Length: 80
Image 1 (tube, rainbow, N blue to C red):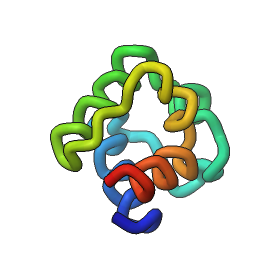
Image 2 (image 1 turned 180 degrees about the vertical axis):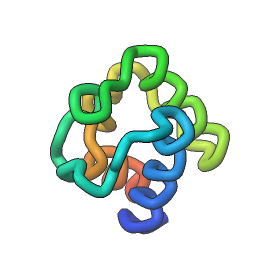
Image 3 (image 1 turned 135 degrees about the horizontal axis):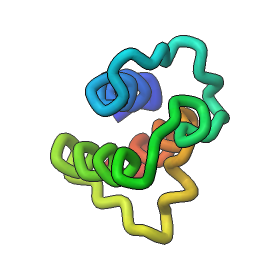
């Protein structure tokens, strides 16, 4: 999976988790929880959907690596 494919997939997932949020204005290195007001359950939901779609399990100790669009894209590009 390329970083661009990962970003597109995460944007689609976040569009379902946080409908009405405009992801086009989110900076790649901005913390998603702050930028689009994700709570911990929303974040866990994102991680679970990523696992369902890609087979990539993000362990809890790697959560800081997937807090941003750039981070999750890089993580998926190296683990998918």
